[in-house]
Length: 267
Image (cartoon, rainbow, N blue to C red; front, side):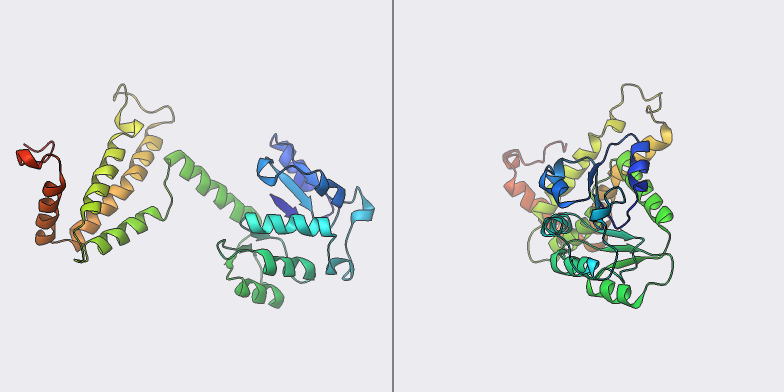
């Protein structure tokens, strides 16, 4: 979902060069016929109009004080439903856009602002108000890093980046002594079972590399191991022998195998 203040169609040309046909919105009439946003592969919204339709162009201070109701309604939908990455905007000459972001952008999303130079005072005050993050680099570099990171997450089959931190905090809480950490025991077993079932540990032949190569396969194994490593390291650091014995005893009591006096798989 691309909201541009430019009158030209360079964005559309670049998108088409990648084999994608964008949906283009320049007028209130375009908004009326627009499909639900989540169904669009790519949408370019010319908020200030398009040079191919001169009547739609907004340029002066007076013209930029407000938007047509249909365009404002579309902008509100975008701001409410999508995280915002700002690039190439001074934040100085667009009062209606700034007010729309202040009013509609939810706190659950982080606002990221790419700016290689010194931001204007208005932009800095606005970013601080929105608790936004300044990315002090060019748009080319920032979006390049973003696509590299997304590609790495995809190739490694990464889980959510907060998962490891959440796991460590969960271990500390459950080993605090306020209750027996049966759930922690179950989580550890489930995570190691998940690790055991990854495709890289179940190859038809271990004499051959994965289709995308050994390095890619190794990266996926390392990624899949992170949660197990975090669990094990946190339990080793925060646990003690007494807690381990209590958890083992409590597990045996709760286990359907307690009548034979042993855990499944333990000889």
